[in-house]
Length: 305
Image (cartoon, rainbow, N blue to C red):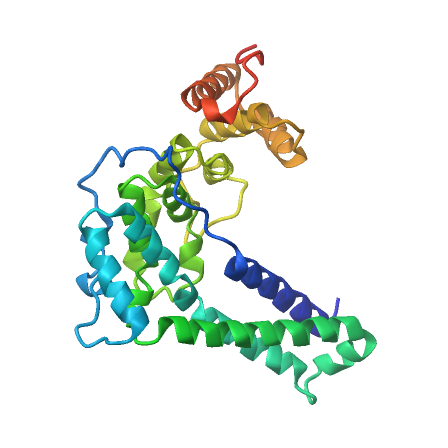
């Protein structure tokens, strides 16, 4: 594959990922959300700079005034306000990413760019890229309008509000925080955000699972699987093949269809574990199923050999 073709493919993947994230709907708060984390003193506010969570004293725009009102309510214990804040700043946090995407696409679409030769042979690809460039520009403009007057510190505080909403019992926010995508879509100027996320991601995903967020299983399994993708400067959690096997097995038992990726991971880990660890992993999977009846695991499946 040529250099131009690889560049085109890479930008296309980034574009699709960004658009999917931008237009994805935010699920409402779960009525079955779990209680706050077992360590209530480990608040996210203690790990971030105060200005990241306080409204600007001079802000008078509608978005900044709404931020200020919601922030006061959320810090006072209003779960819905914290959820609303995380949603309010999401497009703002994506603003830089959307700008960069538009710039990359415009560079590829430039009449003098080498990529034009590729597009000359693939008119449908050119049409798709032109459409995506327009979407990126429009999304960036929308972010400008919805985030006018908000400070950079407020914009990058999305992780804070996700964590706060989770502390107040919102399972969906716990899932959003635990999977860490909020870190992908904001400038990583505060590296303490990554450190705090890494410290609490697993417990947040466990809280999300207890609150009915079934998708948390996949992140818990992959997070302990040393063969899965690394996340920022290392794996999501400490590699633990027993825990990974247990979560993959719970996923398999909870699914009404065969997932070849899950089954493949189980086969691989099954070969790596000895008999004692395999039994322990299956016992853990059974415990996960019993503790989370909403998963609907197959109760007749054996947990040990």
